Amino acid sequence: MLIDLFYEFSMPPGLARDESTVYAEAIAEIELADRLGFHGVWLVEHHLMKGYSHLSKPDLVLAALTRSTGRLRLGLGVIPLPLHHPLHVAERIATLDLLSGGRLEVGIGRGFSPQEYAAFGADMADGRGRLEESLAILRACAGGGPVSHAGPRFPLREVEIVPRPLQHPHPPLWIAAVSPQTFDWAAAEGLGVLAGPFKPWLMVEADLARYRAAWRGPQPMRIGMTVGLLCLRDRERARALAAPAFRWFYGELLRVTAPVLERLQPSYEHFRDLGRFRALLRFGARLRLLELAGLAVVGTPADCLARLCRYRAAGVTHLCCAVGAGALPSEVVRESLELLAAEVLPVLAGESST
Image 1 (cartoon, rainbow, N blue to C red):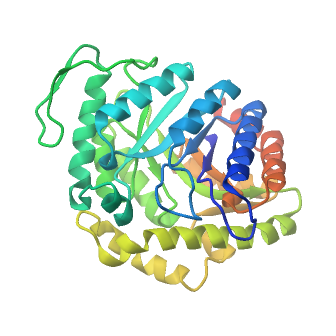
Image 2 (image 1 turned 135 degrees about the horizontal axis):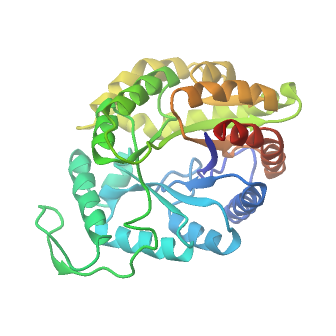
Image 3 (image 1 turned 90 degrees about the horizontal axis):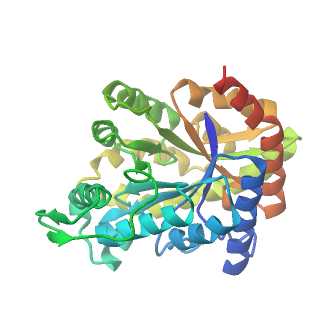
């Protein structure tokens, strides 16, 4: 199981950081992770989510990181395809792949914010259809030569996209998966899946079993799971720091997903299944509850290794770690990254090689 990092570029009120500081500190942490030997980093794309995420153009940040990192896989996690024209997305992907020397990973999804859809003039009920049609065009653009497409949303006739990506035929493709049906569809399409942190691990574990059973692709499966993580030498200090930080992060996640959970937008019916868990979190996203739900890993290196076993046993290949959940000072995040690199990554690397 590989350890990646996951960033929202959050601005929790308790830290009183401005946007310039958030960007500078996150980029410095990612550059440190590159030197320490982490596998990759994923940057979200969110719009109009003040506080929770100030990262609306992750491709620009990744472009900067192509110059200051040399080993990390650089992930778009994820592009909400229904908000974009697929030709623009194809051009962004190819450009980033060239700049990074073929280190790009591409996550796609529908998005979950009615506010985003309304602001960009897209129909949320048509999100799945727009995603599937856009994916077909992205794949066609990577095939070389002129592209024609007769779909209802993006008719194309003999267009030739430049530049072309460095990886052949294109960078690895992943999809943000919440509903069981998306896991089925991802397996049929040969896509990697990015799960969590929308629902508890027991539900995700069942989804992953379903995905593994449905997989028919010739290449190895790719399964990513996002968790909040804090690894420090002192267990009690780690828990004391993580409790308010993770409470804020998961509380904000509930806030930004509330519109789709409460109004049950068409084609988002599976979110109804999350209602009971959401009601429980309304009493407070306490650290122990988050740990029981499999959404947080906190403690010493030994504690963290013991808890990582559940993800690896379920087939997770990439654990996407929100170290500090975007709500702790950068010096604490860097301390945790260095300890993970010294005492957790080598153990996982040794186990994967045996």
